[in-house]
Length: 470
Image (cartoon, rainbow, N blue to C red; front, side, top):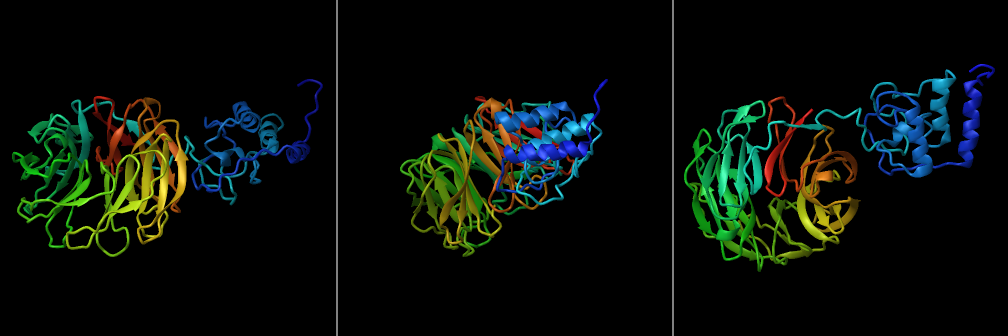
């Protein structure tokens, strides 16, 4: 500007440091992130501009949230204050230095500090972001669960979709994320869940569904090429089964089935004979009256699979004896709220499966750490503005720590990735919107590019959609 002598940038930075000492507003996250980011690019538009200055001032004086605090530490002194804002101004108008590394390309912060980078939209890790598949939806209404497995044996991922109307649909994969028109098989009214295993040991995958309104399970034996025989139904009691999983509970080499049954609340174990038939269910009472969902793992390190059930406000732990039996149910204290979904996974690196819980009112994702004996302690709570309804644990970015993929009830916050730090804590990642009542998230390489994609259900009609990994 005419008549104005630019001040040396070093003096400006020194003055900014004095101002910062009098007015220090620094947000510290106890979990130090290792995400890639670009220093100084606060608004994540891939450029150092005045908009970064206004974003920094908004954070300092108006509480505007930032996904990547490390990016706001422009001078790399481990704090966020006015000197960072002035650093950008000096660069733009007085020929001052560019920000320290990482700049202008995405890298990890080379300087240890207590600032976090929750998520940098311009520096996403490989496999950690997803794009909608335009060829959706791909299922009929009133579906309840989807599984993504190659049931035809041709190397392409197929979709097996259970319907509350009493059938399963088989969508054979055509490769590249495309699917053929479905083939439908009758099961039982109220099919709530589907599991896939080789029940008759012929090398072909078979199906089992739990049928809430028929108080039964349906077994469909695979005939090859994705074709299945008509269902055989097995009565499991007058208590509305709502979930199941498959495992060899008695160690005889044959696949068995566990079911979660409604009021008054039981877990049913059906021991398999290896020929596609099963013994009558043995029922084990639970403490909770409507034990869904059902999760399993070796909770106490004795080599036997244990089962945790949940109703809206309590958990039951039934320890396996390795011989096909379960111990009497033990109560696990539950976090506040209505339990909507659970998962078991080692998220703190101690080799014991921890309990991950979604709740409604309050709308939280809760980490309950296992001490190795099956005693769980609430360790972390992450709150949201709408209720999370489903959890899938998956290492989406290949760093060895499990991420939590959460499905939500609102279209404004449908799916979200929480990046695991490997110590039982998580950082908020990207969210995907526009899918109301998302649920049943399953990972699979749908488009044959080597990255795991996501398939899930959405909306009151429970249509099936895909998100393809970028």
